[in-house]
Structures are given as structure tokens and as C-alpha cells.
Amino acid sequence: MMTPEESLTRLAVVLPPPGKPMGLYCPILVDGSRAYLSGHGPLQPDGSLLTGRLGDDLQEEDGYVAARQTALAVLATLRGYLGSLNRIERLIKTVGMVQCTPDFHTVPAVINGFSELMREVFGPDRGVAARSAIGVNSLPANMAVEIECIFRLARS
Image (cartoon, rainbow, N blue to C red; front, side, top):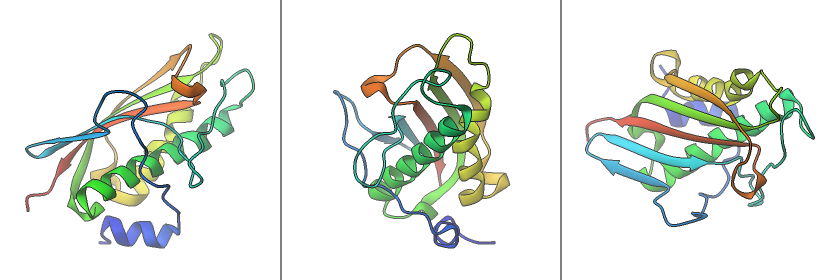
């Protein structure tokens, strides 16, 4: 079985730099064996965010890409704080928010962009979590997707 770091290398993805808070909060807070990640957005390697509203100026496929990019931002925060993704034992909970119009009803398909990358990196037993997918009217900085999550850390 591949480690998460080996999986990331195999996928040949580029992690963005760890994001900076957009307010007064910790991007990651470790308490015992749990890592709580504040809401992350679709941060790109150049530091910009993927922005827009699903059902308006973005389509489901655009949202999927934004959710996948948000997964990369989450992985960047984890690696930056923990030193290695191999310290992650499993993803426990994901809450995904999609900025969308009231008649956009495929929010879960958008958040699959995040969930599928987590499964690819951590494997089906460790990377598939309990999940909520919610459509919202507005997100900070007009980002298309915001995702928060909880991970369990491996014992050191």
C-alpha cells in the first residue's frame, strides 16, 4: 500500500503554497489526535482563488475543479503544519459549501472533486469520510467552494 506522500507523487499534482487566513482564525488546529481544518478555498499555485457562482457564471464541471483545487489547498496546509501527509491516519468529516444559485441542485457532485482526490491520496479506507454538501448564497472573496474538514492523526 502506498503512503499518502507516494500517492501525491504518483498523481503528479502541484500543491499551492499554504493559504493565509482571511480573518482571525487558525487554518489548522491540532488537539490530541485530531486536526481541525478551517474553511479552505480553491487556492491556486499563483495564490489566486477560483471564484464565481455555480449556476450563474460557473457550471458543475467548474465547481468540481474548484473543489479538487480546494483539496490541494487542504493538503498543502496539512503538509506545511505536520511536515508530511504520512502523519494522517484518516479523514473523518468533510463539510463542503458551494456558492450557487437557488436552483443549482448538484452540489454533491461538485464536492466530489474534493472527496475523490482525498480517496486517491489516502485510499478508500482512509480518505472517504462522513460528509455534508451545502449550497450557499455567498462565500468569502467570492470563492466558488469552501471546505472544512477533520482528520485523525497517526500516533507518533
